[in-house]
Image 1 (spheres, chains in turn blue, orange):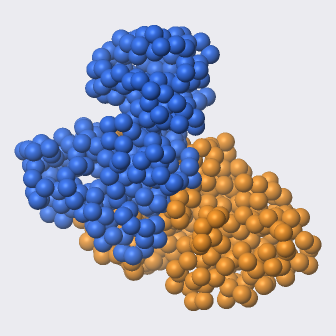
Image 2 (cartoon, chains in turn red, cyan):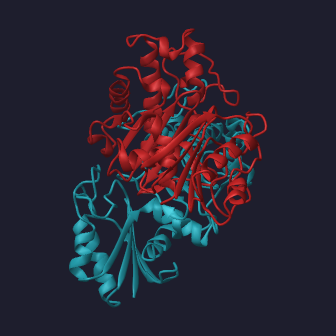
Image 3 (cartoon, rainbow over the protein chains, first blue to last red):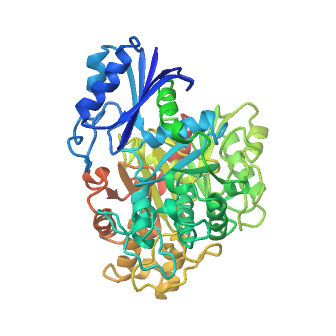
Length: 284
Length: 284
């Protein structure tokens, strides 16, 4: 039995399935306290058998590099009770000897899209999600990028769109990419939630401008062959094409990977990417 | 016999040595036409024996991913005669069956610094070079990052330093990182070559500000445990500490890898990094 757990900020998904990403059975429930959330997932699994491997896709920041002191733990997070909580220990207690593979939710999503979604056959792939925050998972030469901690794609600084004086909403940085282009940023800037903005609202030009600059930094640092943009805020009609158009303008004909079009695409797996990726993590 | 070739824009280095990076004998000569440059390097090697493996560290853009149509070729470059030239074919003609490993000069340098220099024991390491251009080599989990082409670190956009109205010198992008902070940019901005600027000249505050923003993007995308900055323009006293100070300010306490200090450091291998890295490439 292969199991997957997607631990999200507001909802948790637990599933049985295959290391190839096929979901046999799944259950979605609200994320509460860490101990209760893990106990619910493990109780559901125990009713179905003893997994040989569990893939876990977790919200960050989280220690995902084996052998480091922080491995398995949720790190500094504003979510009450979660900081320093070990996600891995309860799994090993419930199922001694189980093989656990832990990664970020966005790395699970990029893996799922690479194997079964909008990035099939692409070994150098980036998956950006725009929602409450902005994050990215990156596959480089078929390997998931971790680094010393893991990417924190929302928190570097991009140039200001000419004429944009909005201060940004990130509590750490104000006007980092997340501060200027996350869902809460759109709501604060325009006074309307992203979901309620018309497709021809200028908000989408601003949003595409900032995401294009984020994608340009990806090209400069990891050279993806394709960039997937998902998450609730990315679903306005034409948003991906608009972002790609601006990206091509600012790239100035310099970046060869942009020759493969479409370059900026929506995900194919939608809400399923996280749990499918969690199952796939067991095979990494 | 193990050989290394560092193919630079102005000088080429050829060496015999070990896959562990020890140089036995080396020869430096000016880079001329592609055919002549390769012939000189191969002639020098042939006098010393038949190498079983050759590591090549080349200026970019260059096709470094095996199996792709562009593999082994120099791509779009302003250097006359070099575009579309295959670096690998002449090596295989001269020494049939020789094992060739080709990578960028900056990836060779980050490998050398990780094994024998300022990044010993660090598996997530970035090496930025500032000279005529700006580039970076990146080691992630001990693997060199390639992507669909390879990183082009100088060519993404960073925010403007407040009050800075300089247009930038990049012929493709104007004010990308390279356009705002390369050696030619410093010379154009201040009317004085970087090498002739006093260590307390405000140019170094500007330079550190831009490099700190480049390093912040690295933290957001590949999360290095340490950043080495080398190249001719990085050698002003105090430059690395100043860059780290600004990086900490703009990071806002958010990025855990910055806790390991010093975080921004000079290279240890200097001019030798390229050829040592070329030898090390034979063991990758």
